Every structure is written in structure tokens, then in C-alpha cells.
Length: 188
Length: 177
Image 1 (spheres, each protein chain N blue to C red):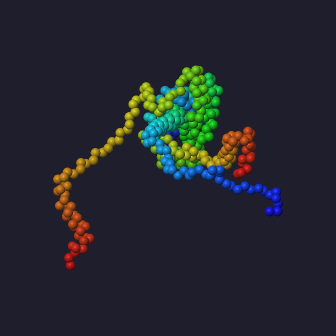
Image 2 (tube, chains in turn red, blue):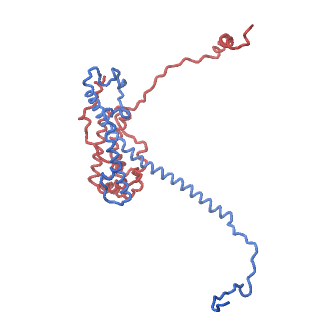
């Protein structure tokens, strides 16, 4: 069984692809544009992950497409507006709380946005774009939630059946409990 | 009175013609009329309510923008993590085989014959916690991390205060330990 598990894992050659060596401020500075640029591969990958969340080996190809798309996007940024991007992410990194807040860096952001619009032809997505439902056409079958099969219980007893039991219960109670523990029944 | 050239004092006296009459008539404070107070108060409260709602909306949008960045980056990071996990799985299998090669009774992936990887429905296995790092020394490099942590903290402090342009050497910080 375990040998099967070992053989089911993909090999090192399948797993080694060029990775994006970027720091968190750089990623966050380009995150919203990245999400819009790589919309389709990201959606396909997340759909795949939704179908099988515990098996990372299934969604390898989709994940590779996502990183490939990330390379394309950050390559474009590097080619066209590198200086603006650098000023933007250094500004983000200057946040003393460590949260990389977007708010105190509006000026470099606007410069970066203009550059992206002119040279790459992309708008910055409006606030709430990623929080909304985004539809996607895919060949993937509709997700079916697993249905649990419950056993059918017995029907509860009717009123007549309960009434017929009353006399029987009284006998049991009188003999078992009252007879033992009540001193009134003791006859000298 | 021995000294004739002493200081000359002057008696304080009332002004010529005497003091004026004392004003003891009743004086009532000038009150603002109620309609003016209401006319100022109600618009001010309305403005404040509007301002509160606006600030709430602004804060929510501000929070949303920062969370959206994380949402957009999630697939990129998750894809990278998946590959890392699979690599570590494979590495762990090889390490376990290598570790127990002298013990022929040991079955690979089992605890004395009891299977560990419970995957009957073929849903896949995702590790928890330090499961993947079972063959590592978790406390390796603790001293190093302490040393570099203090160094980084000091550099950060100087970056904020901007007293010294030069970052001090590593030995200055390691003296405390």
C-alpha cells in the first residue's frame, strides 16, 4: 500500500519549475493587477482545488499555468515600468506596522497606475472586484456535494399503543420500586 | 525726623468729586433663543451622523482593498506550496527508507504493520503541523536566528530614527548574548 503511495507521487522533474522569487511587498504591490491579468488560470486552479482540496497532486498542471502567468505579468512590469514599481513597493515597505497598507502610498500608486495604463493597457480593478462572484466558463463538471444516506427510524408508537401499556407499566413499577423502598408497604 | 531728605510719601485719596454711584441694578444674562439653538443643533447632529456613516464606509473599503490583495495572490502562493508539499512527501519517503534499511522487519509507511496513510476513498493526503518535518532538527540554528533577529531589530530602529547611516557590525549586537 505504501509503495503504491510512493509511486503515486509525481517525480522531482515534474515538480521543479522556475519559481517566482519575489518578496511580499513586491507581490502585494502587483497583486491586484496580477489577479486581473491571470484571471482565467487562477479561476481554473481554484476550481480544481475546490473539487479536491486534500490532494495536491491533481492540480499540478493548473498550478504551473498560474506561476507561468505570474512570470509573464511580472516580466511585463519589469520591462515597461520598473522605476514606478520600485518606488511603489518601497513605499509599501515603509509601513511601520508591517501591514503594507495601500493607503499612505496613493501618490506612487497613481504614477504606477498611469504607467500601467499607458504601456501595458490595464486598469486597476475597482475596490470589491475580487470580493464579488466572478463567473468562469470551464469544461469541469458541476460540483456534486456528497450526500449522506440516513437509516430510516421506526415510527413512534401511537396513542392507543401507549394506552395499552399503562396497566403493564403500573404493575412493573409497583412490584419493582415501590415494593422495595417504601416502608408503608411493610406489614408486621 | 532727623533726615530731611527722606522719601516723600503721598496719601492715597479718592478722586476729586468722590467715587461714582454704586450700580446695584439687576442685570440678566443675555439668553440665546431656543429656536436658534435648535436650528444649530439639529443640522450639526445630522452632519455628524452623515460623517459617521461616511467614515464607516471608508474604513470598510480600506479594509476590503487590503484583503483583496490577499485574495488575488492566493492561487499563486497555494500552487507554490502544493509543489513544496509533494517534494517534501517524496523526500520523506526516501529518508524513511534510508533510515530503516538495517531493520528488515520494518515496513515502509507503517507503524509495526499498522498503516498510517489512511486513504481509502482516494481523496488524497494533506499533512498537518510538523508532520512533513519529522526528519529535521527543528532547533537547528536557534542561536543564529537569535543573533540575526537582534541585528535586524537594531537596523530597523536606526532606519526609523536615522541617527546612523552605517549599519553596525554583527559583533556589536552579538555581545549581548
